[in-house]
Length: 166
Image (cartoon, rainbow, N blue to C red; front, side, top):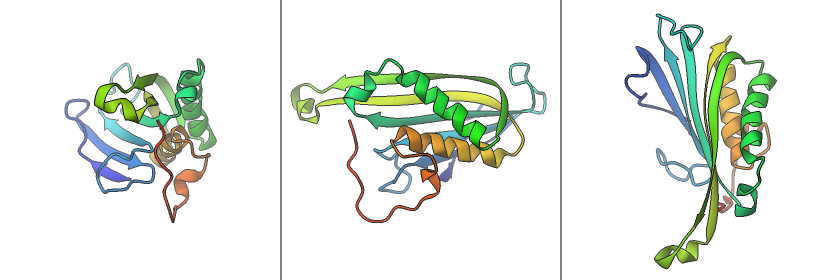
């Protein structure tokens, strides 16, 4: 996990983090799963936020193509976020988001790459309580999308890395 420049114009104050599952190189998105967490603050308390704070997050990971066609995949991805927030007692309100699944097939010089799939979750919510619990829930979400079990976000991995899926 590392701090990255926050997007301009979303709020008067903000901080952004990037997290990668088993990154191979510093500052480069991991082929196993990656995400962004942005904490926004606006003392004017925008109506849609229901308070002065808002979290915006993004998480994505490659999938096996047969998982990518599952009609419940988007629902499961959203439920993982909700479960991660709830398991850490990270109170929130005004949640919204999208889950997008993408299927791909290479042609021509990319035909050797075969079929691929990807899941992407974009979400926002207004936090209630400690921000650390929200960061931990987001880290769990990124790991779960990458196929790791809950709790993996705090485990250091040594040895060989598995190959990217998709």
